[in-house]
Image (cartoon, rainbow, N blue to C red):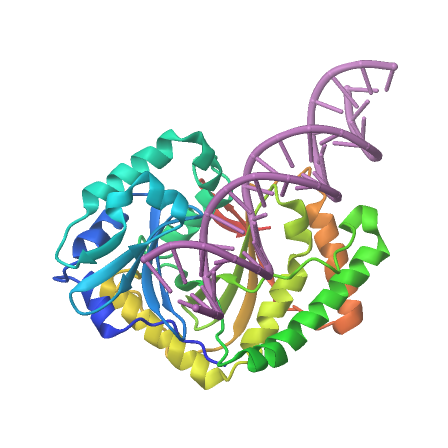
Length: 324
DNA sequence: AAGCTCTATGGTACAGGTGG
DNA sequence: CCACCTGTACCATAGAGCTT
């Protein structure tokens, strides 16, 4: 298993000050609805730009002078000129602007950002604790949609499969316990495998952040299972290796400017803390009561120390983060 | 580089619940 | 008892990895 999503120096330098794609960095920083996601897996690396939940472009390096601009077919159809092979010295800002304008004008895309739901708040969070972060911000986002990689399918099934199995079983039991209250056939429902945000706080704690919008009731009350699973996966991962990867990603992001270069980094990793962040929580919703019930149930099954350091926050534009 | 498959998620309709 | 609210089931869409 491996986890390190630092991109190659060559790709990173394109975005750094003086790099040929530096204009892209400025462009995203100046558009409040846009944000970066950079990463790699065992076969490729990329710099992607998201508008809420939509990946509007991915930049994939082909060689030193050429990149491939990719996205879902839907967006390629809207703005064909933007996609395909490009020279790195080409400035395709106008094409991106054109794409965004068309996305804004077509209501079919509203649900990914304009409706001010999940995509909107996820983007806000991501920017406040990322590219707009201050030197004294409580924590910084190291990675988004974080996934641990496996060298092959056998290893994945063996390591991840076992952990997933455990939580799927619990989900099934919860469903059988009270199908009306918690949902039926939850045993068939898959448990997510991407962590929304991996962050680092000033004290040196790694925060495993799961984000939910307040209207997603079942997502909220079932989140102990999801959060527990990420906690298992990341605590199983060798600590030294995780620490190295996190610091490497931090440094790379600071060099580019995706994290404030003056943010004072901790000396070492202290702890791993699971976190739930909910935006626009509706206090009339039963989600909180059910969340406590699920937590109680899982503690009965897995031991009282299960998620004993979990933290939950409300997130609003007005007050930022406050205890849930 | 594009198509295919798997999976996650938002939107929506409706059923059931609740409060006035 | 009615009007409104909430949550679930279902469906469509899109992201991501894999294959060629």
